[in-house]
Image (tube, rainbow, N blue to C red; front, top):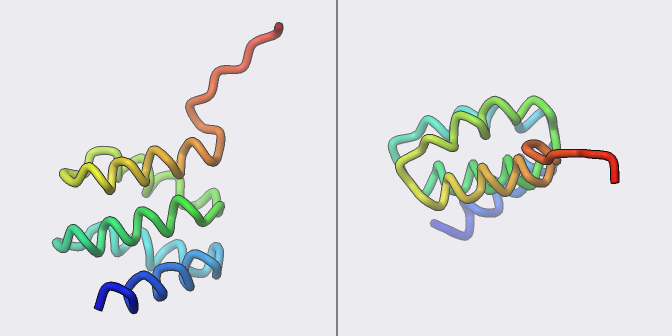
Length: 85
């Protein structure tokens, strides 16, 4: 069920670092829907341990997984260029 999967991924995301390893493992699933849900949850979870999994997700075959990986990295400020005004 899609709703139950979303609620579970949101719960893992809300758990912070405790849920990060389970979500990173779900990114290896053969199911695109599972990978998308995991990438979305990792994007919303601000645990720094999620960064390697999000970088790996940038190479996923699913555009939605790639979108959420980019979103998660941007939320963390990665890839930004800082320069003096």
